[in-house]
Length: 286
Image (tube, rainbow, N blue to C red; front, side, top):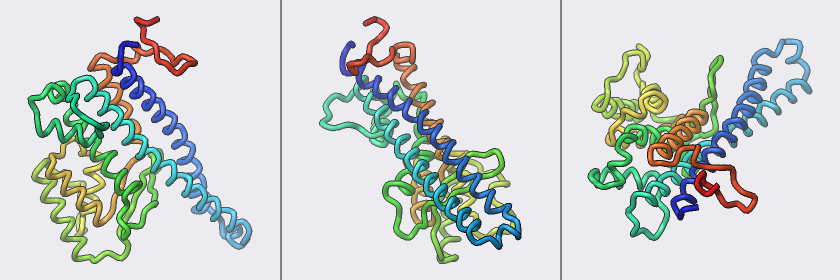
């Protein structure tokens, strides 16, 4: 052990292991929900007349959906927690040292934006776009779907396609169509100021394409958005609904932890398995 930095970066790798464990559990929950959904969709007319069979399928669909939602929200929360641990490790290494509490990932991002010439900002400069992407893919949906959900959004919906990982969604029930369309137009204007929007994002003939724009921004364009676009996206999602890919959040966060740790001198080879006493050993210590 060399000092507090060793502990901080050891915590980063421990969090990364948790993300891998959660992804394995997420796969199991997704498969259970997929099987339950397919069982309901493919139920024959004869089986549909068997009330006890229908009740069993409906009960399994409800239980598997609840399990998926629980695991999915846990994935978002732990991905966000892992990013907070990384942020604190970065601050521990590069400063500023005059702080009386742990830093969050959002605080680190704000500090870098405020003082781009600081040591911490120059060290994290290669990761600027990915930090923005993680704010959109992890921190924002984590807040809306898991921690501070607006009371007028119906949460817990899920969506998937053949061979695809699951998405978790929330949506506004009985929205004011005019307000919804206006929100979609404002979102489009903000996104278009930041990046070109492909034609295929907005289906032809759809008056309100806000949901399609939001889904595209979160899942495909997160790293390319500027701060104004992220603010507009946040406002739209909090008012009208949100979507996120739990598996994507885990993967992006895990890769980011590894790449930042390696770049600042803490590659995986630096760490040895934890001793029974709970103390991490470095290669040098060994």
